[in-house]
Length: 142
Image (cartoon, rainbow, N blue to C red; front, side):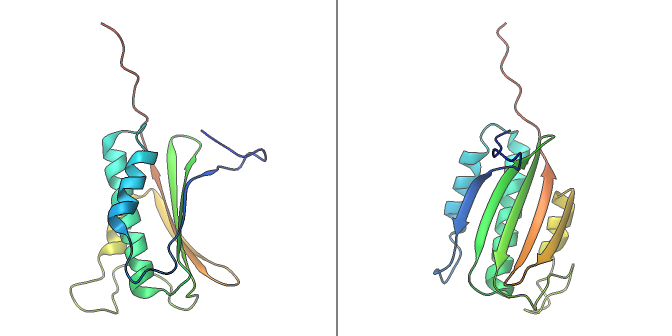
């Protein structure tokens, strides 16, 4: 796993999303697939879903600035962070402010991740999720 000189994980994706009226989800999913090509396809697909949901929530319920970060953790794990500038509206599992057909996104996040949560900083909130992944086994010659 790549890491910094201090032993902390390095971001394999770090994207500033400020400035767009809508999230560039298609491009972000493509970036996730490319960055995680060494992992099992199920993990990559789950990571794409987590990224899509967390970023969509930041656009729907948060406010700029919005950013997205992803890093690999020890033990074949992945962490996804989405930060936005709204410290007041914290995520709540299964509750939607946008109508009766919404509110299941964090249930999906909970099911796909090994753990998730929210951290409030002095200027923002970071909604994060961690998931276990399997590294692809090298192909062995016959």
